[in-house]
Image (cartoon, rainbow over the protein chains, first blue to last red):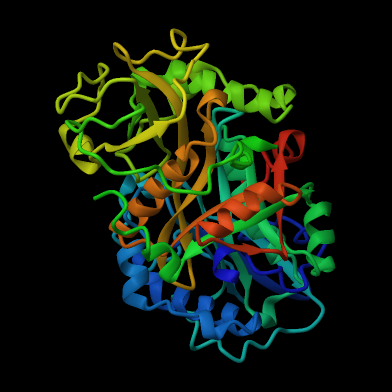
Length: 243
Length: 243
């Protein structure tokens, strides 16, 4: 089910990431440097693992059928924001250099110009231990911590596109640090930048923490609408309709 | 609100359109010839009027802010099915010629090849009077009777695209004749043709007739999910986030 919807944000922090220091500043305590950037085909193995973790988190692994090759063939076929788009959240104990080595990519110059990575620093009370640091390493000393997948939707009443957020996920050890808010804010900011009218997503009605979090972020709930889904054999039954 | 969602189908007929005669057959009674084709920029004035009628039907005209120029600038910017796509329902008292004159269009050959119009004949008990026949005339003796607007969505669990139906609407005098089912079936058939995993849309929870209709069409309701929406000033507040 979650494949149709973002999971409830895993215990999201209701407050914004602390401070906005420059990369060359020296925060006290235990700074965790974070960055949101456009994902590339190179990131597919990490995205696949994140989606699987999301299925585990939601106890929906019986519905998990995604393969890396499926992701390769269906993502990254359009310029960012025009179709399915993935923002990746990366973290490091060290500042991201101004010209941080990027993973190998087929992203074009136009794509890179479409989105400048967003950086934030979170000052932690204690050093953070990531038990899966190696598994989620993107470049040296940088780990993938989460993602958001979104795509354009459309409002006929506004005659304007918007964005629909399909999934937003932060790995367990990085939760409650404002990263869910950071990912959602990045999508909202991009929508504003593009003159879009709305950002929408869905939430489970019993997930009161997530609902509270979303409302604090300025979202309204539309309580009367229900999702209808045609899938599997019921969808396949329409194969002959147009012939 | 309806701009985020298809309206409840206006008293949809639970049965399929009767018969599947060829264009050259001669149905008895009062045949109404119908056709679903891809909309083109030429159809924008009709689409705009249909969206407005939908707002009236839903008592939501206070939310209606679409202009023809807004529709022109946001629709038809991608090949059909890759982004926002509109199927138009046309009706006529006469068979559609095999080479029915099409409205002037900027549609490319590729686009035209992407979808062959679907034709059906409905045999009515009584001749149908369309009080807005002139207002919705597309080509000679053909009236626009409804539309469906849809676009790709994405399931991370399937690693597959699907279609999301934003709006489905049939003008009042053409309701209860199977046209809602015909429009929805056309989208479902296209999804199957493209190897997509799902077709989804939303419905108002109190619209029991619409829910019954959708369930008869094979759809499942996902009762636990609620839509969250960030729009207006609440969305605009994120303008500075990425800067």
